[in-house]
Length: 406
Image (cartoon, rainbow, N blue to C red; front, side, top):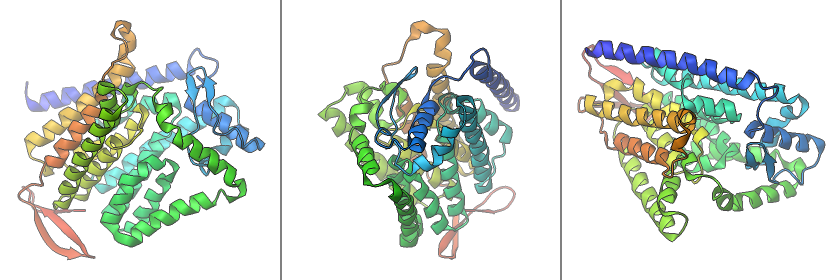
C-alpha cells in the first residue's frame, strides 16, 4: 500500500469514527434519559446552590451522587464562576457546561493553529473531537477544555513575545493550583521576574476577590487540600494519567512508591530542562512543559487528558522540525494513548470480561511520549540568528527556503 493511500485511509477511518462517536455520545446523553446523569457537573451545581443560598459551611463536604462520592476541590474564588449554575434547571446547567467546553475546545485549537498551523488540519480536528478525552469532558461535565484553552492562550502569548500576558494566563491556573508549579516555573524561565510577578498578582487578585466570604471558606478549602491524598486512595489508579498513579498501580501506597515517584520526577525534570535549553522552537518547548505538567502532577484524572491536544497539535504542526523516525515514534506514543483511552473507558463496555485494568498505563504512555520528545534534539540544519527583542529567532532550512518559527 502506498504511503499516500495509507494516510488517506487513516484520515477517512478517523473521520468516520469521529462522526459515529459524536452521534453515539449525543444519543447517550440526550436520548432516552429524561435527565442527564448526576456526574461532576451536578456536584458543581449543588455547590453553587449552597453558595448562592448562603450555606458556606457545607461547600467542601462530600456528596454522594449516583456516579459516586464527589468533592468540591477548587479554591473559593471558583464559586463566582459556577454561581450561574445555581439559578437554572439541571438540564440547562448541564447544557451550559457542555457548551462552554465545546467552545473552549474550538478556540484552544484555533489558538494553537496560530502558533503554527498543521498541514493536516482535518486529521487534527477529527482526532480531537472523536477522542475519548472529548467524551470524558462532555459526559462528566468537567472543565478540561477550558484548562487547555488557558494553556494554548499562554503559548500564543509566548510565541508572540508577550511574556507578561502569558504570565497572566498562567495565573488563571490558580483555579486548579496543582497545575501551577510546572507552568509557573516556565513563566520565570521564559519571561523573567516581570512575567512571574504577573502570574503571582493574577493569582493574588483571584484570592482577594473572596474577601467578602471570610476566612472560614479558605479554612475549609485547605482542610480539603490536606485530605487530597486520603481522597485519592479511593480512586482507581488507572483513572489517573500521572507518574504517581503508574507507580502506585505497581507498588501500592507506601515509602517505595514515594521514593520511586520522587526519583522519577527528578529524572524527568532534568530531561525537560536539558531539552528546553536547546535552541528548539517554542511550540516544542510548550509541548514538553505541558506533558511534564501532566506527568508530574500529583493528581490528574483521565478527563484532564484533554489538555493533551496542546502537545498533540504541536507535534503535528512541527512535523518538518523532527527527524522522520522520531516524528513517527512520537506519533506511535500518541496513537497508543489515544487508543488506550478509548479502549479502557468505552470499547471495554462491549467486552465486559476485560474488567478494569490494574496498571495505570496512561501515565506510562505519557512518560514515553515525554522522554521521546525530550531526547529528540533540534534538526542540525537549524541556525540561530541575532536576537530580536532579546529573544533568539530560530530559522530552519527547508526545500522551499528558510522560514522563521517562534
